[in-house]
Image 1: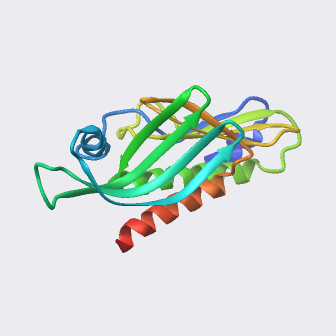
Image 2: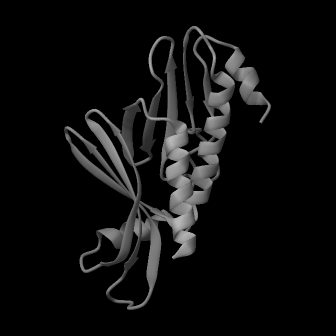
Length: 187
């Protein structure tokens, strides 16, 4: 973890990676994504836990439980991320088991961004995308800094293009993931 402040101080064009690609976690988001796309799947409950809005792009984060009609009483829980851009919408379902690892990636990103704050020149990008990591997460995060401009938060993933949210903060996203994890624990 002491690498981040050192890398940030290098200045100029800097990129820090925390990991992203590799084999998927068995039974994690694939089963939720598959079940969510199946006809006849029933949404047992859902609760929106946060939104990111920035001009033309928006993202709605909703925790939910869904049930397979062929297996009454068996629920799968997680997070539905609905992304809207002028060209259309994209939806990603993330299994409950993946939320804590994603929040940990965000925590690392926020730590690096704090070490970066106060820079008065240059451009930089911090990202959670790193080829070769053992576990492939369904969502990646980025933070772009340009001197004189508002930082930009971005969301993307292996099956998702990058969506940029100028003016949105890492703390907003951390709050959303914290609330999602807490809501699922309480239900």
